[in-house]
Length: 412
Image (cartoon, rainbow, N blue to C red; front, side, top):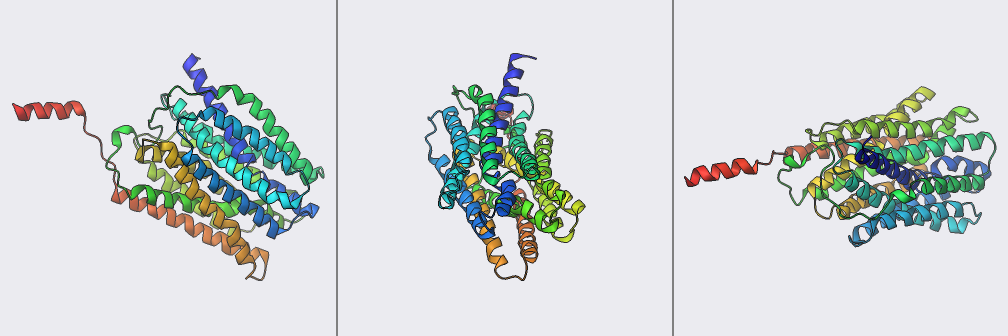
């Protein structure tokens, strides 16, 4: 293995681990711990929705902060800071003071967004000259983190662990993983603006001013489309299969599917418009969300978890690379914009569930209505990408050598 290959592998591993901590723990550790907290009687679904919303609001604030952080700041140092902060904030959730939990989940969301944006930017820049789409492998991190925390929470549930113990165990896990990759994140000499997947630099085409806002809207719809499943899946499973060990398998299935989706994204062709991949990913996720409404069985919920998880991180990977095409300069700022709009979609999820639950006869009926709306949201997002492809088709950039030859012939 050459030195360059070893470096690419190390960067990919570090990025995956960093995103596993930022997203799998900082954002989504609450999801598998929620049934344990409900069992312990330390909160109810109302407070759970407040904590989830606080985390997503924090994610929005963190994304906005990432947009204004000066480009000259050391991105590796920022990533180090997010790793430390996630460990501390996760451990602090073990303190049984309910009044502090909203603030802790808010700060965890802030740190998660900053970690996601800067880890993505740092790794994609380091991997910009890699011979393949290895960059997509860093997005196995969130899925791996979700799967790991889901499995750990399932084991802890079986063994009767308290929620406080679960938070502390997740903090220790995060600390150990951070130590593994700490030295890999180093200050970059430069941050080349290149394209890693899907649309190559030779197919830039004309970029309209309205393309970025429309693209951000479509990406934001994905945030709302998946978040209800990602927040309440273990609770839905608990209501569907009470007192059954089956309720612990669906969240890990979601995580493992997300890992598989990231690996599949690495094999996409560079000659194809990346927006086509986004359309396919949205449709798959929409089917997965809808399936949980119409197929009330272990098989149905498993397939639903897999279909929602499969495009989960692949969507982020495609979107972050597409925005590097649309706005090749200051792409970290536009990555932050996308992440912010995505966060707005997520923020609307838990309150929507809470509002629906107050106006229906049962929790099950409330979740079904919310999931149906989420599925339709994803379909609308896919339709926006179709409109964008028709409105702004990609065209091959003319070869400058041919242009020069034609000009010489004209002058002759």
